[in-house]
Length: 135
Image (cartoon, rainbow, N blue to C red; front, side, top):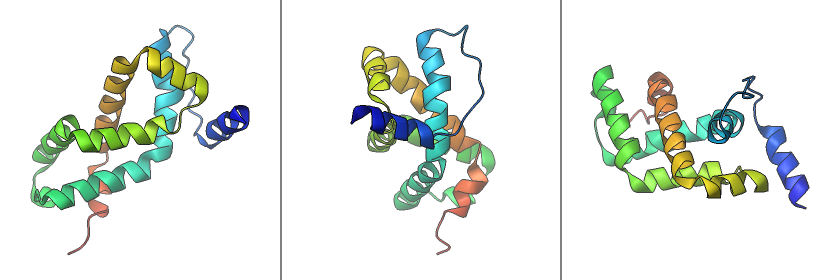
């Protein structure tokens, strides 16, 4: 049963061609596992962050680009509920072997995941704004 779940999870991930033969295990994990999962989850990540910004009523859409970037960094760095939700989304897409590696390097992989999500969202501010309700 686990093998079929693991195969299904791997099959839905986008294929990113990165040579990780010279990488340390956690860095290889970032390229081979985290990046494809985040690319796959990208629309949901943007939806969740846009909803969170709207619920907080930050006036995000009226900020200049530099303020928007700072606001996103603060939100993704300090909102523990949002961080836990995003991390849970990613962890739910790990295979059993990937989960074992995660459990051995939890702090480092969590840090890398938050950094990757933050950069991903910051680089897509226009797509994020498109998700805001036109209210």
